[in-house]
Length: 263
Ligand SMILES: [Zn+2]
Image 1 (cartoon, protein in one colour):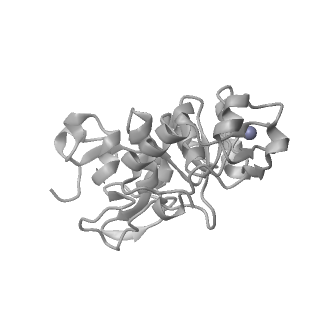
Image 2: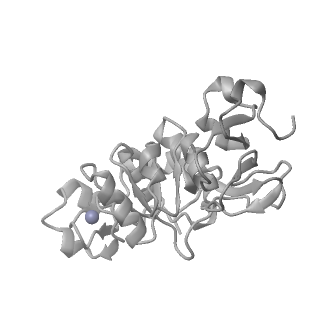
């Protein structure tokens, strides 16, 4: 179908929108694979039209307007055709799409919404700096993402649509282990996993401590069985390789493929 509104839409100004690949996750099943005819008023940006269709802007790797690469803020003209592509898209597109999602330069750091507590613990377990406060409201979470250049992970589209948020993703999976695998693949993190480097409670980097430092804090049996201990300098939590450590190692191996080991 070429440009020009069909009779049913006479009198309404529209643009055509096609979502590709993982961006179709944001459509109801009946609309996937179709061209969406969206009404517009004035000359909105591509970002406005995509977000009205349910797609948070940090999910979009590239938009094309009338087949040409464009910016999210570029304004649309009635009758325009907009194609939107996700990160990692390998099908036809006007330019190559990066295989993993965009992220800030340097170390990957995260902030998670209050419903993703298990994922937060798993990311910390993998050594990623992860801010998580189950009681934080949306404004605080988005503010932290912006102020500290953190990748915002959420299941709330409204939160990810906030204009100031630059990096982030809607977490698709339900099970925390699957969510971890999803995030590692999406942001290309497999080579940056450093198991058991951080406190699971507060995300601070752990320090090696001598036995005398934990004498009053750890049961005598554990002190007899364990050779080394680590302590969190922020909250005082003490860590050692107990049964919990073995369970977590198995989980990481199952989730991330071949054993990450302890580096
Ligand atoms: Zn801690």
